[in-house]
Image (cartoon, rainbow, N blue to C red; front, side, top):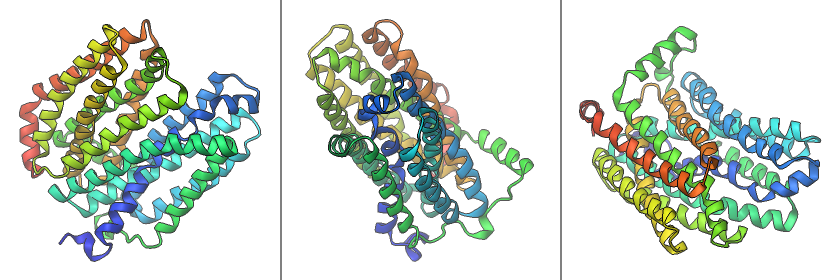
Length: 398
């Protein structure tokens, strides 16, 4: 029996932490179909509406540092409740923003607040579980995340079509309210004796120590590569599928189908005891799948060849996401909040860097080069640092 079972049931934690981790996909994806409607409402350009997505992404990255650090000092429950209260307030701010400029600002704050739920969910899991149990928890969280990635654009499309773009933010408000209610039953997972002092010197020392921990840094870097691959697909997919003559609804359904692969992989990986083996196998699989995907793009093969390659790639991506999250968080239990913040922000930063590159030149060629380059770079990184991985993963109990 793990320690968490004495204070919160495993079923409650699996469901609640899984739902908290979905804030990222829901906040980013639900309103995408409403861009033209928002532009018409504010009488502005599409580029300014797209700024609201960029500002939300920045907020999701920055908020993980804010709430990750604060939760290491004051515990998980109260910072989580504060982040959810802020989320409720700014969701109303998005709903009633009179100008596009204020709407963009509110989206930044909404991302900031949502990041609190995401980063603290990982920290609570690391507080309560270790080793195989932690892998199982992140596997279940990954499955719920995969389902949310499927549901968020579909749910967004439904409510937008039925009630208009503002209904998205009413829906997000209701989701936030439900999560806030869930904190009533959530027990504090970080005892007072395990909390760290919140001052610049101790923070600097903690960050320096984390930066020297190869068992944490290496899987975090790998996670950055994986998220970059996902963002390349998100940025290129709509244009590639448009070339196949797909409608907006068909594109959304295809993205949803691919997200199922993430959930399947996360569920399978949670059954493995050796996460390092999963990392090595997934690295090889991603390179092979990316080469197949590049071939379909460069040779302009049929849609089903393209889709099969993407689905296969996402299976390995989902496996690597779960494995690297488990390894990174299991190796940094003392500063789980800060570690979770750096880990999550790495993914968003990597995605933010590669997304604009996709639009350079011929999108088929650029996407093919990025897919192969990123997966190969990740595999080379793993191979070069294999000795360090062995050394630190053994100390982490892998």
